[in-house]
Image 1 (tube, rainbow, N blue to C red):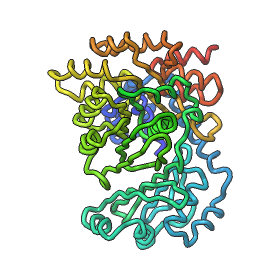
Image 2 (cartoon, rainbow, N blue to C red):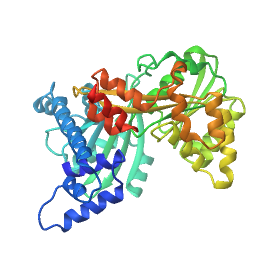
Image 3 (cartoon, helix red, strand yellow):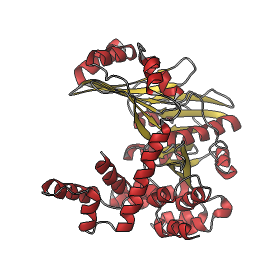
Length: 435
């Protein structure tokens, strides 16, 4: 597991490719003398000793954080709370510990994800019969039939206090299993997430495209919902959201809010987005711009006088623009760049970074506002020059991800090693250690 974690960290942070890791594992498997993956990568000159030491330091810190995360509850206390509990009892214990995900697998001990760390709960493994019994209350008769026929199903439920959760239930060689993601009961405010007023002021826009980006579990949904809630509080109009699933139920405040869930209320994002244009919307929220058709319709909606907000799984502003353009054929790309240059208003790119004390995570954020100069760069296929303009755009509230990481290091919230792992300009972060 530790070897796999080391390799995965190296791949996830672009130190090596997945193919290079596979090559190193093949060498390890063929070796007559046991060798660590790190040593093999050094021998093959795929990484430097400095990179290896940095990653090993991050690994060690994460392990220490995992141990600290256990402080505050004991296995005996957890076992007592879970004894005889139904699925909602398991979920309540997960929430009380502040964990985001619950893992229930047949023939395995339950586990939870706390502050990004996966923690095993030292209670007896679930038998296949116990697991099946736990999941039955979550499924309708139709969903049970679909699960029996297809081997997996996804459901969402609301708890008594309004919080919601999504359960991905599936079957593997051990029996029935589920991963349950628990959502916040109410939306965060942008001020609570330490965004500047310039980001809150995006709520005053009446048309255009705003994108929130980042890897899985980076806070995209939290920030997107906070921005929508800012619009809801400030403005008058009709907000239509298209989500998979609906994570937080929004009350109609200044706006009338319509929330649709893919799979339950509509067949797909693209179908719901086309339908939304006939529902007299002022604001359209697309939880994920996942295909060319959805991206096209979102841009067209922004062009025709709507404010469209959406998310993408990209790590920074330049990659976001490139990803959207590359979704189209070469013959279409210039037209898409032209459309984006006129409709795109802002990109917020996010990362959640483990805190240095092991308690929680800090939000690192890149903020791009589209100025006329940046609009020209997009149109002229020179998006790679955008970071240079962002560095001089601090007066407009712009910020590069590397600068946000550096601020968190200087504030002693995150470690130097965690920052350098995530940085684009690693030398820039390295200089912080000298200061």
